[in-house]
Length: 107
Length: 116
Image (cartoon, rainbow over all chains, first blue to last red; front, top):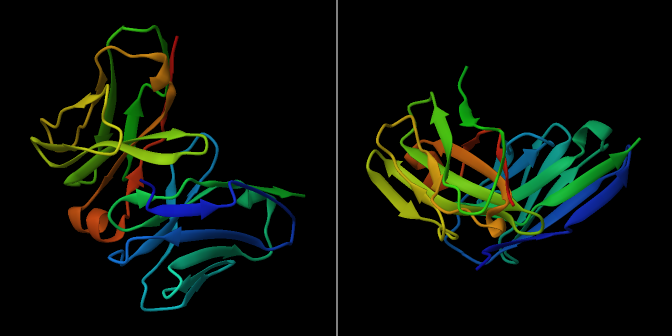
């Protein structure tokens, strides 16, 4: 039972473009929504996280948008760079992860 | 340096040959867990532990065993590996609050296992 659904499964973006990854959750008890970034050959690492009492959180080029009523949240990567090429996982609290999105940023 | 270490990083074995993947953390974390990562399925939890001698099943525990005799170590044991256990395995650790409240975990570098 996947409590966090993530899309798309893969994404190709040109350098300088905006990458957008979407997630939907089911459990309204979730109270924390982290995103993880995983480079090839490495373990996932916490990238950015948001609590449901705010609608947006920005850290550098990375922004989380949160829509509590729709039970959806998304990661936006502005001015995407080849170094952002990685797999991204959204997550909910209670140890639940999305399926992952493989992002490729072409130079 | 705070870290989670796993050994081995790569392992090729044959069906039925018992193996152990070790995991160790140096952050004094109570919580440790094992995940497997498969394409299109994301991270699926195998087992987790909230402290020494306290372990519990995750979403996909069949075919795996764990033990937590020391706080820093959490080995994953495959008593009789099968080809469907070919996967990328990650160990993770965290404080109890950060794990269960916020799902903030520190991951190891991964172990790629192939079972022939």
